[in-house]
Image (cartoon, rainbow, N blue to C red; front, side, top):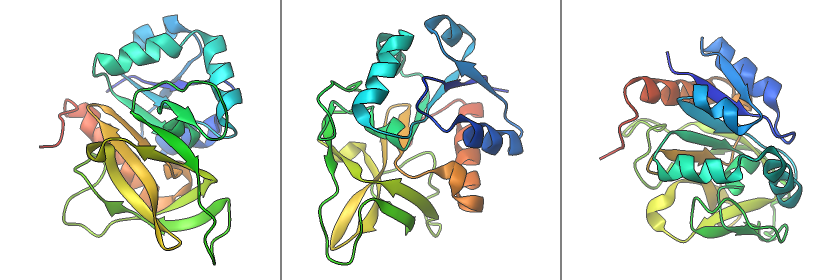
Length: 212
């Protein structure tokens, strides 16, 4: 069994994430300091709240440079909600530099007639690129979103899935090498979310091979 670390920097809904993985038979260990990474095969970066306070708290743990190295070394990392946004270079929500694992920025969702911000509720994923969490040829899941900002990747190859928003679409998932992230909350997405997390665990156990 893989040892998966859950990054605890004071901005994540850790309990719901831990509960979801426990139901799948996968324990998580908490990561609060760089030394905690030594025991981990993969990492989860959760997050709720605002961009700048999250980056400040993440810097306070001493983990920022280690997370960049983790990505550079192609080790598995899964971001959730704000955890996805922190993977980008910058955000309209603040002024602090993000982790920069993905090229691009996070922008406020545009005002759309008939849409409220924050975008809150269920949306169906629209695959854009191969991704270990999505099974090609199957009906795509409905998952739960709560967000006012969305990532805009510079590289189309990094955009794994979108969701309908107003007259257009917003980023729902990104993926590059072994780093991926969900703007939605799989831990709050009932059976569909559990299946996505199970897909990720299975992918880790099978050697984390990249999609062809």
